[in-house]
Image (cartoon, rainbow, N blue to C red):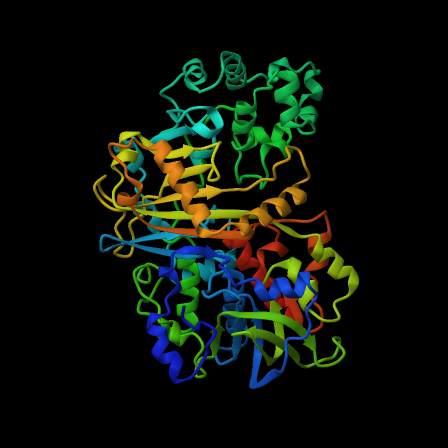
Length: 593
């Protein structure tokens, strides 16, 4: 293992040609070690980190967190105050970008790119002027995706939305060419479940005869069976549990159907459908609500770089540290290999220091009139301190009360109410996709598996990068896991904690075994051999994934400026997308004055 904690000197220059986090496979995302010190601070209340080296480094701004919001904060600060202003970005991970993580797989000598977190620029037409100005300045051309995204790929290859039932849960391994829900339709161009009627889809499901009858009732809808006056119906569906509706109105008690239903909303509402109302379940297209062929005519889901929003993060870094890579815009950077040795050079106005967990931020005096803020961080298990005129906290809201000294208790309490749901994006490098083609799988709902969704990567060719062309070519397959707690109906935060604990307790072999069983059960043995056809696996674990806002008013109360410290992150939006991250960065910089 490379000593990634090193940040300067001749040794670093020798190591950095080998230091290239995007190419690492295995356990990634919040990789092992990235939360060691933050957990020690939050869980164990650790405050003694040994001798602290007071670095002779003073910055105009110190940014805690190197995700899109943190990077955008540095960008906006220089835009407002001058390109010569000195900014230090500290991040606890071994790569920048936060959830906008780049996964590189080399399969039979061919580079295949994937996103390991932040997926796409969602609904850019709804973005603020601030967002569009930033994207334009760093060279992101939204119109380019009209041609870069191959909308005909799935139809041309007859790849549809299907459901895979595994033997362990449903008694047999079976693929049914119907998604039973609306989740897959955000994959622009995918063939939805129009080949089977509801009757055929219910009959093909590996359920008992009683279960098939129940499933058919669900697929045929049934809001008409609710005995509520028409004028009260809207309020009823917005206040009544979807699971109560399934059980009480449609008479569903088959555990297989309830499992299908619980997983049919996946990450749209950050919980299983057991915690949704009828109205919410209907809006996200849960089991029983008719699949739509088009996601959003006005905002197609096509604004996706091959590495997701990692391209946005990389373009921001390139804008501020020009020597880090070759390329003049986001498209030209798609295939550019970044030189990580350039990130923390003293000559840079903006420096990015990775593997550095901030454990304390305190004003030099009374926060109301202090002119300096001291930031302590742990790098290579050693304590360091730098000084800034201002600090922007662009990390998780829930960590800020543990890090910022003297924070008013009311504000700290509001920040503690913010939360994040766990999320896992696994990317798999395949030598070919003949078996996927044979089974006509573009996306497979998988209600009995850890990864509830498996799908072919988004078909985007841009910046010299070519998406897989034929079933004989290497490709990336994505797998999504939105882990829920074991107890159906338990409160969301309780389920998050349980799922997070289980997620972090697993080793890579546990994930590999699960993925092996998933692929072997879903794909025909005559066309697929796991050991032969799977080249690489990257498991991007985000124990703190999607932003979950707290009670009304708590978000704005929590993000208030505190002396020379302001807050920027998706949590302060609250919304889990790149546009929000950028807008919150702009707000935080403006609050500094």
